[in-house]
Length: 290
Image 1 (cartoon, rainbow, N blue to C red):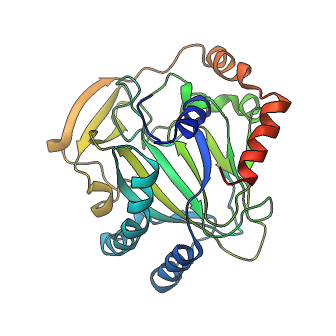
Image 2: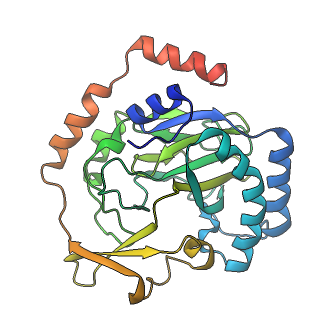
């Protein structure tokens, strides 16, 4: 994996497990972000889980201006040479708020060796089993499938949900803590059973040398269409509504799913059952804010 974190311990844990949990926001920054949400987006009446990636560009630009001031300096402190391509608020309301295990789309050319994109998922309040914990399947980022598409119908590995669930761990977070995870990691969140909205700030990060790349399944479901896009594409466009123009088409490749998916899951995940010692060690680091 390419160098992401300046801290060697964070890099090592991330490479092995696909995520780290770190305290990154102070109370002033949390208030700044919360006030921004309340002043611009609190009129959203949609239930369940929502994200501002499909909001009008004018609102996303307003969000990005504030996020960039906060997360720009954080990224410089934490990461090597990386850039943010999208800033979002993510909300979880009571009704229909379960997010099942999934992998995010591919945002860079992951077919290159050791190239990853990742998210900074930072709740602006404590999370728990009542308002919706983040869940991950450690090491699932090491699975072989790299062409994760926006309009893919039967994503690989998801037919084996029961098998995946036995390796899931919940990650309660304190206000201002972030879960930084690669987009190829299987992740989910538990339902919000409270009367309050659980608010999270999210940032998509890629290596500075990489271009944004989105993939779509062709109409005949035989090819993967890869679009290489400018850095501000997600800010100014809604990828759910329309595909990019043909001018951005970078390449097409055959749509080929991994063979023997359950066997691959076993190879990747079964050695990852953590020992009691490693669990205790990680809990101690989390309490210390490391």
